[in-house]
Image 1 (cartoon, helix red, strand yellow):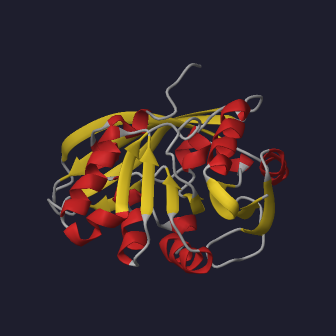
Image 2 (image 1 turned 90 degrees about the horizontal axis):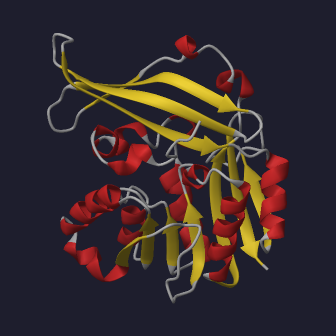
Length: 263
């Protein structure tokens, strides 16, 4: 199956409503974790997969210089719109459209972040190695990388799609309920990829569908052992690893949250 791993981010309701469906569940507390890490490691900061600025803007508010890189122009447009509401941050933030597997910023950073599993939209081992190497080249000696992945839950990947409950949130503009449903899933055990088709629906107070849109994304899963090897291979030393943003120890099926130092 040939798919676009980043189709979700091409525009439409998936992008418009991204913030409603990101940051909860296993990602609860992630922004606070990144703020604490920025205080610990300093800046400047590079955020890969910066999206709508959900993490970038709080970092800039704390006084950090931040460069946010993303492949999606519609996501960056949303981030830029948010920043226009905070002109005091203009001198601290730069948004760059680019691919995390190959970019050149002519700047080096004390800290690089890849939040919200963005790294896993790089769906080949070669691409993941390229991304980590490229990030490493942009870190100062002894600079740090924080990488957030999901730890693969194979019962979920290969289980019954009908057992996956839709997620609902309230549209900040209209106040309507917005529902996101996984309508199909294909997991490739050989390539370690999962492709999901998703449906967005906006419902009025009577439950009638006002708008409906379908999109998709693909992600590559990594075992903890593989992630550790990738980091070692590309010039990092693992400092810490957790299963959530409360710094719990590694655990199956939760987050792979890695803190690594550039060697």
